[in-house]
Length: 308
Length: 274
Image (cartoon, rainbow over all chains, first blue to last red; front, side, top):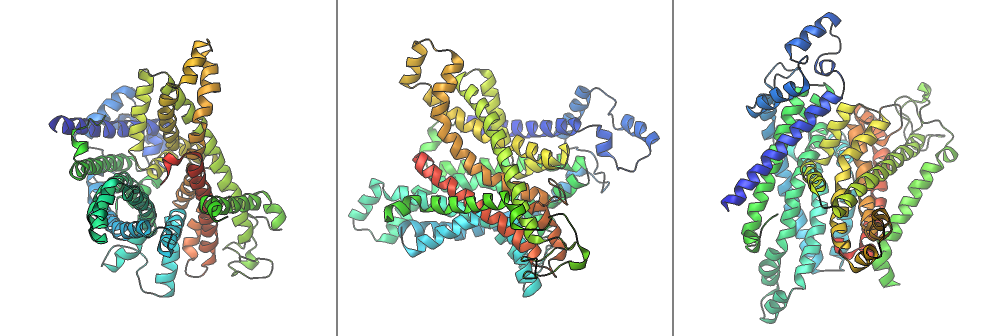
């Protein structure tokens, strides 16, 4: 277990390191970094001074070494727009994104798993048809369009919900539904196929032959064994959930990490972009680590086997 | 009949929708008389049903039906380009990495793992913001973000195909490596490439729309669904149709392609079934 934890930690560091390296060189490839990092309306004579002060006249290898060393200390420089420590700015926005993603994940599970299980158990019934039809539709409808349509219906027309921003519980409703829609659709389909597969296993037949009540057969014998693909998908999708937050937060003016990243990209505020990339990749790898731990709990067989 | 529908029903619906979208895109100039970028301030923000403008007009008086139909061209063009680029590049890299199990392949796969551990849309968005806006750059950004899926799937397939008897037999006959790879291994991994391509196609189109929606990617006045939705936000209180129709077109396209992809996966390779 300890060796495994250490290798996972190494992997996390590698992912974060490579992400930062890739973005660093992409930014440098994009042309004169001074022009990228500074406001457009700067005087020509100031350019060289800035270049010298920010160290852009040094060889690329030196710049890169300095960047990585500072990044390792959590120093990504100052935001060009807010004139504040970039990492601090990003971390300040993290709770908003996490609470939104957590809410969406909860909603996803509480809708998708029952729908998936019911569709599998009542295979071929109306419930199955409607549930899976809804899932296929949910996968095709883009979140940002769903968001706009919901704003039109519930805010503009009916006036029931606020159009955006963060405040009371009502502010959570639309962003959560939009963020959850795509993942709930996928989750429902995976749950259905996973439960269907498990229902064919012999231990389910045994449980039924023993005369156990159907809820026990489904709830206890089937569901726990069907959970592994569902948990895998949940882990993989959490990253995509963070990506989806970028769009959802922009639609609903949610003061989170995703919206900050989009604004930083639009404003060419690259210290903030780099800090956001750092926080995104750390969060994502941490979540996948938790999923792996959850695996071990769900399926003891995976504890022993090598995870190469 | 019932069995046929159960097995191929989705495929039939999907192919029908996809064909309609392709026809609409190809025949756009024949279906509407309006130029999608020609503004006419006299008829700004007219609701659907206005004579001459069945879906209404936008804030500049441009015909919405024309913009939605021409938008299908932009979306399909981007989707096709991205799928071809990623399938060729990713497929080739996967083929080589699977056939020659040396360190370059191993390094490539590690890189693919790292890239996959980053949200696709955020990756494409960041690349696009750095390399610049416009049609060509959005294709490049999406392709750079999307090739890894092919590389991974194809490599995995090649690893098993190359141990099969017919490959060993071809090897024993003294076939050249290139011939062996492209004539004997490639056809056997082709179904996987087709499946991944069909599933990626819709993802690329939706991602492009999302990125253009955020203000990157394809720029106005090019009639792309994403940038049309982005512009529609300012008029949501007065003109719902500006948001409703481009988004519906996007959802319908994604639905059609997804259905075809699901169906292909079930028919070609039951192992991938979800």
